[in-house]
Length: 175
Image 1 (cartoon, helix red, strand yellow):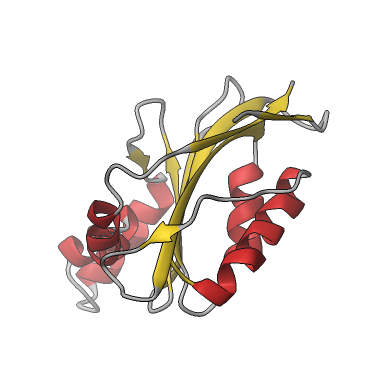
Image 2 (tube, helix red, strand yellow; image 1 turned 60 degrees about the horizontal axis):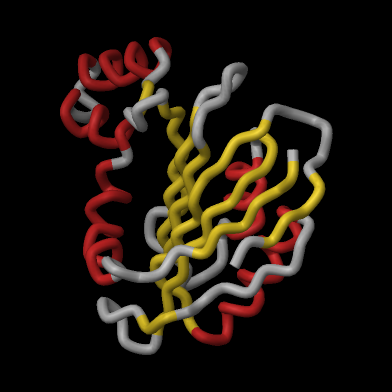
């Protein structure tokens, strides 16, 4: 099913995917409401049981919209207890791509991504990691893992595999 909605004229068109890896059933309608509020259309996700966490559900949503939509969705969902999600946004001719990951234990992770999905780490963040490691506060390997979102990937990996084969629902904005 494809739903079309009018695009806001405030940026270039892009698309992405929202992966809700695990949410308690009571939170599912609130997630749909929050995402729909950002996208400007009612959202009804196909929730399936999450085998990695009994009593939890998972869903996926492919979307099209203006650049910055992933950040708006991540802001709408961040901080909700017991919610694990990721949202990606493809780069445009005038903006980088983004990836947000969120877990109850770690909070939110944000990364800039290039055209092939690779995480791009700004120079100043790499320099700060080297300085922290040189001062003995941490190791360079731990800092680089943090910059790449490894702790989030480690926690979400079980939930990602449990969702293999789940349906993806497309939601488009007319541009």
